[in-house]
Length: 363
Image 1 (tube, rainbow, N blue to C red):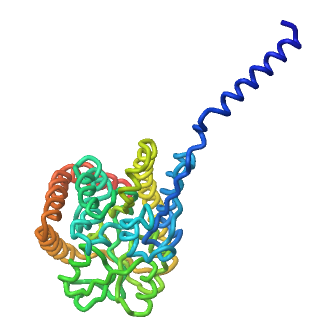
Image 2: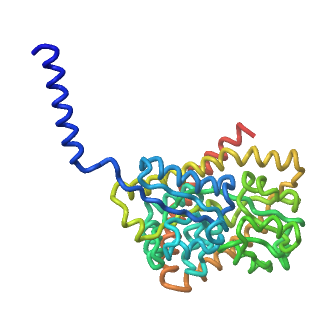
Image 3: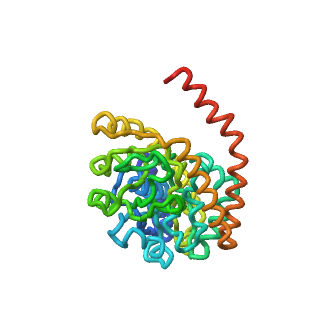
């Protein structure tokens, strides 16, 4: 074939191919699904708000834009503590918060956020992913038309900010302290008045004297909120929240309506977000703590053994009473407690044992 003939035939072939493609379905022009995520956190707040942003980014990018997620901070679309209901009724498809905020819906929700003297961050992931926790969480949230996910963890938190020293358990008497969940019930038994406030309202309440003390997360977040301007004593350890799970709750119908590949993307984005948030807090907490102490003069204090032992006793009473309130709470607690028991020996030999060994060389 000469050159002119080749070009002519090639042109005819290209035209035919174009005609065929024009009549074929546009398989790459998939419809974009647009979701809204409402959060309990201030917009773009470090660690927590940005954790929600990262989750939305992961889903959007991994889906190639087929499933896009727009994040709304607390109060932008709905108030912080109305996000659960908003997702349940379909106003938004996703919500980001902490499960203990919803104890008014069911006492059992609290086990999926933090339990005083309970599981640390790695153990919570173990229980949820491999110890039966996820199945129980799904059973619980299905009652509200939701699908639950672990989408972050702060790691162990701090014990709180106070304007007086806590030397004995009696120092809690008469104290108005922001502390949600099971920890709040424990300090109530110690004589304090627990107050549940969304993050954006804590500083002004502490500064104005509406509350006397507060816990929030840890140095990284607490520095960003400026609590050192309103309280001077910073206590550790955070017995009430040893490894707090941040959750993403998804409207069940919306989730089940996704194609299988997009559901898988959502599932794996949650696990990536969990690891990313935990590693961010682990990385940034120490530098923030040093800044609070060295630059801002915060007085770092450890709870005495007597205070911790009493809190442990009260915690056990509270948790067992909650577990006895209804069938679902009892079912979740039984699973949680069994996992905690099997974790104690390994933690003593493994993580705690290694920490002790390392401290002998590096002070």
